[in-house]
Length: 194
Image (cartoon, rainbow, N blue to C red; front, side, top):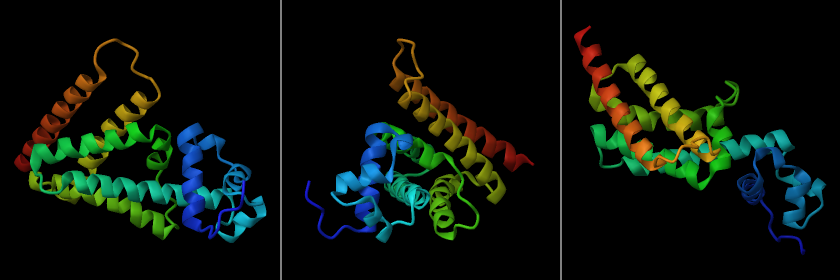
């Protein structure tokens, strides 16, 4: 294999994501990336500080992709429709990239301002979707956590083959969305009474 001309940090991250998508994050090594890039492993250090830095860059890319995916899905929608669109988009992303769940499941180190900001952007999309329900900030955080836990958990179980019964998984997801919308609506109603 001939070396890739103009290897960049972005290209290294893209190659790393190929490996993650094919074999999972545990299969990721600098040697495998170097082989794909057609370079010696030490050449990668011009672009990444090491495997830990590369994993952080992968997380950053995945979080940013998810933010854009969710923002696109929610644009022009409101209320129950926006919540359902957000859930569908989140699930669809993880169906396309089932081995990326880990990048979306871990809270970033508080000292990592760039990754923290990117992660916060995902939450901001959810907050915007939930705003019409009338939540204050704390309530929106609670509702967002529940929404994320339900949809991420469902998508991760689906990706790992965790649903073994013959009933249609897509129908189960429709039930989950109905329950989420109803739950969020009921939670909003109860919060307004207090």
